[in-house]
Length: 272
Image 1 (cartoon, one colour):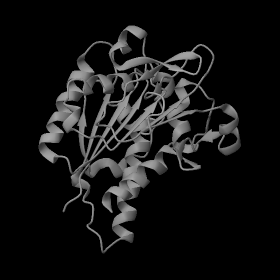
Image 2 (spheres, helix red, strand yellow):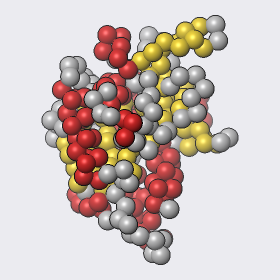
Image 3 (cartoon, helix red, strand yellow):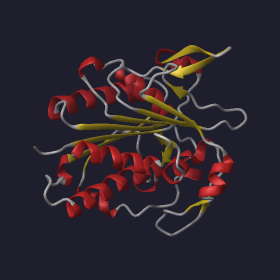
């Protein structure tokens, strides 16, 4: 049976495009893949966005490794991998468009495909809002990453809930039953709090607060740009994409792995 992968990447609002998306990545490997670009993504971001580069490059590395090292297993054809790439925004345009695309994907590829979501900031909120328009009882998402999910309270009201945790109440993301595994990685810089995922004791959800000392011990700089530029990794909202791709922050058993590692592990399990 041919293996199909449907990968959704939802960026944040990115009001600081000039600051955060001005260095290019080498995206030549991405040419052969199927792509659905939502209209909020501009041409510069197609070659300068960290999440787009890191997720697509990780999938490409997995496919190359699998096809070269597992000749006895079904090969993964790049044309059978579909990337949906958009952005969280004010208003309803993003979630309505994403829900339409996901429904079409389900109709085209069925339940046997591997579905993954990578979302950041407002993209997390709009992704969860899109699920409200999809029958999640009959639609599974194998894996979701919620990277510092955040929006104003009025925008997130339909996809968050306050839970009592110990003696305090905490607002968390409502995770639909159709999502099998969620990794939520947040930071706690003064004045901003990313939203954790799932009700207390929900075994599908792994929440992680990343701290500067963890970054400094493992990797102080991010240098995946085409020109080799090194960007200092400070734990704040704008560096989280670089951090989760280079710092172990996703727990499996007693160990922690990078987002990229988890993507490869879950794809490997899917392919068998």
